[in-house]
Amino acid sequence: NGAEDFIQRITKNKNGQVPYGNYLTAIGERGLGKRMRCCGSSLWFREFLKSGRVKLQFANFCCLTFMCQMCAWRRSVKTFARYLPKLEAVMNEHPEWKPVHLVVTVKNRESLEDAYTHLVGSWDRYWKQRENALAGRRAPVEICKLQAVVRSTEVKPGSRGGWHPHYHFFALCSDWIDLERLGDEWEGVTGDSRIVWATRIPVERDDQGRVILEPDPEPE
Image (cartoon, rainbow, N blue to C red; front, side, top):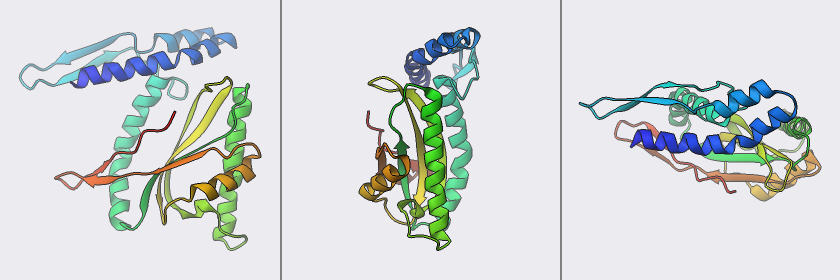
């Protein structure tokens, strides 16, 4: 049921954020580290017997949405709910645009600050190339195909050490992304990484005509 699914997702995120709490403690932020480790340790549900509905009544979430995986996940769910009506309106207006889940990242670095700064700077330079291309000041780049974009940032420990920051995009594109070309352009911008990933998002509609999005899972 919904409560069990919620608890499973909370447990997964809670286990996954252990390195972040340890990192905060290691850099002297013991209070924040403890606050994050305790996040979601108490969940109170209310069951409505007549309807069978289960609702979360209380939880001790830390609300550190830019550091805590659980709170970031909850925030993303609420954000998606707000964006969905806008998304539906845009897709109805431009049915020819193609929905894509796009991910770009950079080579892992030992310093979280260095890794994140490198990602942000690289994307800013790449987006500037897009602006210049659309203004006719240079040849087109692959991200000129992006017509509407929602972006989020994810940072996690790398599987081989260091920190692994990356951007996730939900994008509506004028044409499908050429991954080979995108990788070449991204490597030219970052100087050390051609790690990109994109997948087509199947779009369906329910009986009320609402958009149903089911992106493929991100590879490990």
